[in-house]
Image (cartoon, rainbow, N blue to C red; front, side, top):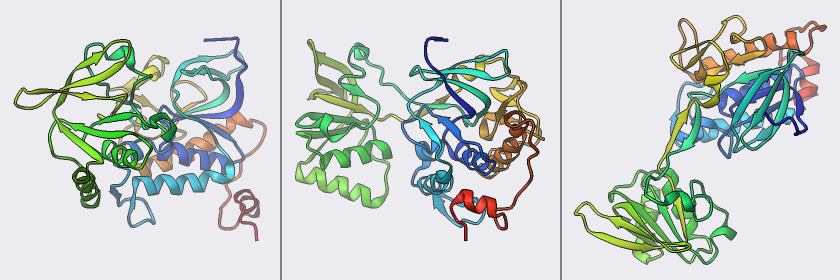
Length: 346
């Protein structure tokens, strides 16, 4: 761990900005605790956004129907009064217990923390983009090949190729068609795209107008000199063509990886963290695990169960955050203190 970095000292560090991590922010906030949140994705929402952003969810209490995106927006709005600090595009790579009982942590971006409590809300693991495996590709990753959407100024007057046939790839292609990109090409292994009817109609219209080129096949090679200037695409009949480009955006889906958590000497069972169901503490004092990352007898991998776990974990954490203060259970319906905290004081 890099000791030269000035660490951010915090009472609570949450690993994961999915629904349970966001609700953990809220529950800690009600108890007067500000939280820092680290997530490997460039945005909040976790699995809800990565896998079913626009698909309906029906089992959130009090909400008959909402999408993963809508649930994320509601949770962010609910947590907003507590001003959580988000650290996106980072993973927690190192964790050490200090002599004073706090934890020193460092992210892949070099951000350092010293935290009294750590809440692991990493779901089934950190979502990472599935890489395109073609010989020679590594030399262009991060410069001409990217695994996320780029701002308009990064594609201005450029030939942009999008690889993929599911929602993220299709939405990116649509946005690029309204950007200053010189040309937009969508490549997918077959001429069947996964999107709603309205989106598919937009794609069809753009293809017909020539604004969007579609190429069916798989990338089997690269054309390059000092820079990447073409992709070799081979169709199902074995015929190959070269697609010119300046920039390639790859959207082949996301896969969860447990990552460094597995090396933190916490008791685990089948790649899940074992917890005490009274507090949702792990085997290491001050580290809690909530949501799909944990396991215990009777565990159900449901968002609403994660909300319950986050509540109990927040109260249990107060024994370490404010050991000399007694924490009273207050109700948001009647507590004037909580009303002021939430900005709803009458």
